[in-house]
Image 1 (tube, rainbow, N blue to C red):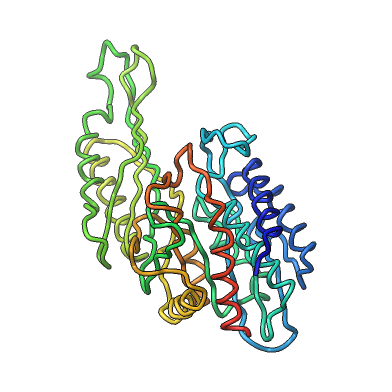
Image 2 (cartoon, rainbow, N blue to C red):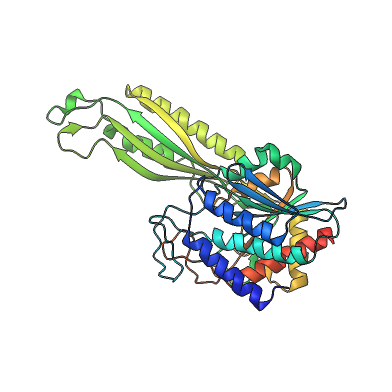
Length: 381
């Protein structure tokens, strides 16, 4: 059990992490802090540079058994914080506005408990992954040769989820977070003087057709296994000037689906239709893929283990609030392990994630830690 002194120290650590946010792929300072904390706890091993700046702390019983991984994220968001809390971000334009500072602290709280009472069998891995926010980190971690020495049998994660009651966990088997993929599309024609628009080949004329096609790829609706959604997030045509008829355009669209295969189908449809439209208008089209998230699917056995653990420690849980349209990079850990994501509520009216005035609810730290510890004890003894 965490003591009052533990909680005071952990909250102070969370505030410290909150003040120094680092973006995806830039988490060197945060990773150094986490590694130092793990070494101070007496972890049996600390693995660095997993899939980038990833860090794993290993608590090993020394006996054969299962390997159980618990994951948190290192990265922050490119958003200016406006929460006004005394521990606000000290880095301009960057903020821990998704709660990853809190998730890291939950794992370090678990580390304190494991340090005092090692697993009786197998190993417990505290995995701090990089680059969750752009969807690249988990895939890079599991592809890293160092990860093969960890190779978990089970993987669990907690994400705070505003809108759920304080201390309540939303969880279910199957789909928990949608797959998503960003396409940055470029259309290129020919400019002209604004006095001679007839000499241009401008994308303005075909933009309504392109927009209708992209929005028609996925209409949303019920979040079932066939769910798809296509959202245009940015459009730019030409230059900010009065003397040039535009000759190019950029469109950002986010494709979202309940299955990884459906995302690939949406992308194929988008690229094929764009090529046809561009050809008809004597334009060229190109695209790049960004923020590619796999679907997160909860294994039924892992969910049962988590639910039994929460029953044991008196944490309310159910299927409220799940699955979610939002994406989560955790899905890649489920490719080789029985995985489950738990959505922990900070309150019904809590500020939403990715908002400039969001701040993690410190009261979730001991709740998350006791859930994880119970899961670890149930599997490893």
